[in-house]
Structure formats: structure tokens, C-alpha cells
Length: 143
Length: 143
DNA sequence: TTCGGTGCAAAAGATTTGCATATGT
DNA sequence: ACATATGCAAATCTTTTGCACCGAA
Image (cartoon, rainbow over all chains, first blue to last red; front, side, top):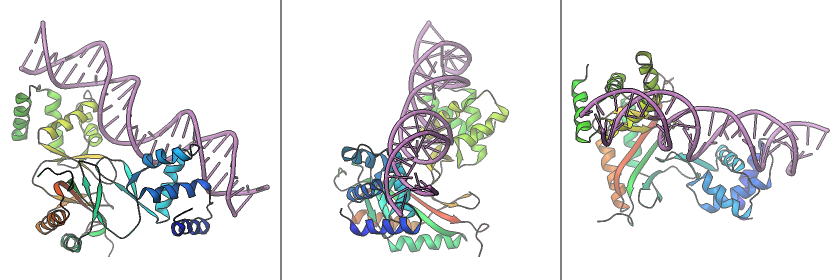
């Protein structure tokens, strides 16, 4: 079993919340981490299915929600409307390639600061935000 | 019939695309413009229903898509996953109040420029973007 | 032994589609 | 007349839920 650190974090979360450690949760977390992020529940289900056909998609969906609760994952929804999960790490935003579907990440202190100023000017308190750029990545653009 | 300009724009679009001018389309466009933006198909259907109970929701949904084609409306999807339509006007982004559900608009040349630089730096061509700030508006914040 | 977990099937909610009928042009 | 539009019902699609059974603690 790889990803010891995350498995341990999950175990701690489960224990402290009186939830149970199950083989399914371990397998699903493993597959999720292995996939590397931005996966949909369906993606993961199909992938897990190859090795563990007895695990139902319901359990996959439920586990992903659980990982979010445990701060191991974040749920995102891009323009296709499907929920995607990525491994929780420091704040960032996304570039979505409409050509190959690839999802890249970016961060910009300038943008963060500017949006804060915009919100302040409108007496709005930002709790979270979503900033996505859709277009073509280096490989998919034609120029 | 109010909103002559938009009604005329729709008429022109219909004519140039060999589509038909119908009472439903006129009524739905009128209700859409009247609502002032950020409405869901359901919102609009319920509203129209009061005066024109014979118009089906299918027609409302289809008409909204049509308005988007005709550049009279834009489709948006915020975090609740429901499609909302707003009257097409100059580019802007949104602040969504999680307290009252109100949707405000903003624009920032600084942000537009900064995101362009981010994209350039990653050899990414931006075709469109989405930038939403979620939080509390002036009335809903507690401080 | 006792709750929480799992998996199936069925439900849910928003939107789309098939089809017979109605209606602009 | 002919092609498009409409409205109902049924289908879709993704995600959630009910429930009987299973299994970790």
C-alpha cells in the first residue's frame, strides 16, 4: 500500500469521527491518489472496477465526498457540469484546455489582490472564488 | 409589446435563419427581458405560466437556447449547477451572495490583464473565462 | 453485538429528445 | 403545402437515497 501519509491521514480522520476503516476506502483513496487529480467519480469507478469489480459506484461517490470532508480532496465543477476531485493542496485556479481536456493550474498574487480590492469596493466579503480560463494549451493551439 | 429593440433583433435572427416567428418566442423573450437577468429556465417558466399556462417548459428551455444563439442572452452556471440566463451585454464577471442569492457583476481591467499574462506565460490561448467570487454582500455580511 | 458501510436498484432534479400535432411562411 | 415549432411524455445523465445485508470495532 503506497501513499502511506494520506492513508494515515484518512485513518486518523475516520477514527476521530467514529467512522470505520474499510478495504473499499483504502482502495478508493489509493486509486484517487494514483490518478493524480481532476478525476470524476465515473473515471475513478471505471478504473477501480478493473481490479475490484465488487466495489459499487455508490461507494466511490460516497468515498470522494468523505475525502473532501477529511480535507484530502476538493470538489470542482468545470463547464461540463461534472464533479471532479483533485488532491487538496495549496490554493490555485485552473486553465482548461478545450482541445485535449487537460486541466492546468495557475496562481496569481496580482489577481488575488485585485479581486480582493474589487470586493472591498463593493462591500462584499469573499469566502471563496472560482477562476477558470478556457482555451487551448500549448499543444492544442494552432498558431 | 415592450423591448422593441430586442424583439426586432430576434425577428431579424429568425428571419435570416429561416426560423419562425411565434407568439411563444415573443412572450418568452419579453418575460426574459422583463426578469432582468440571471434567471433559470424554471424561474421563467413559472413566471410565464401565470399569464400563459399553455406554454410548456420545453419551449421555454428551447427558446432560451435560441436567444443564446441569437446573441441576446448568455448562459451561466454558478455553483448550484443550474443554468441561468442573463441579458447579453459587455463582458463582466460575478459576485454571488451566499446569503441572499443575489448576483452582482464586476469588471476589472487589472484582472483581465493579469490573467492574460498568466496564460501567455503558459503558452495558453484564452478563449473565454469564468471568474466568480462567492461570499456575502453588504446586506448579508455580519461585521 | 452494534453501528456504520456497502451495493443494488430506484429516486431525484435539471435538461433534452421523440413524436404526433399545430402553425408560420 | 411544407418545414419548423410546440407540448406532452418519456428519456437522459449524474448524483443521491432507501433498504436489506455485511462487516469493522
